[in-house]
Image 1 (cartoon, rainbow, N blue to C red):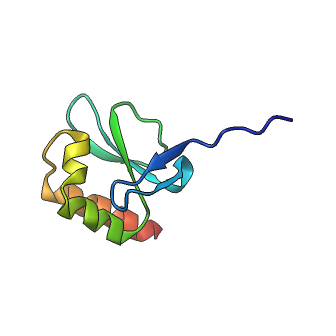
Image 2: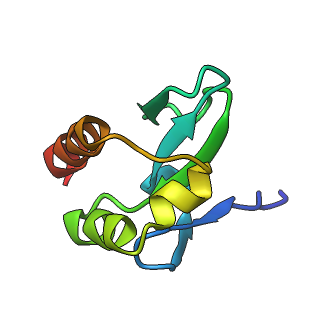
Amino acid sequence: MKTRKIPMRKCIGCMESFPKKELVRIVKNKENEIKLDLTGKQNGRGTYICRKTECFENAIKSKRLSKSLETEIPEEIYEEIKSEISKNE
């Protein structure tokens, strides 16, 4: 039997590669809405981050999250994403 290739993605907080299923996806859709994509299948521009609060804070501090989604992100969306990540930590 042939082994399947595991898709790897890079966390924008710590810049390390992990299997796609271990990361959380953040998506910007065509209406410029930014959402947390727990399924990993929503349409739009996506970026991946670890389920660690430190990685999320590093991504905010270095503005990597805004750069990867190519838009400025409002503070309330940061809070929503942070609460979801800390809940899953």
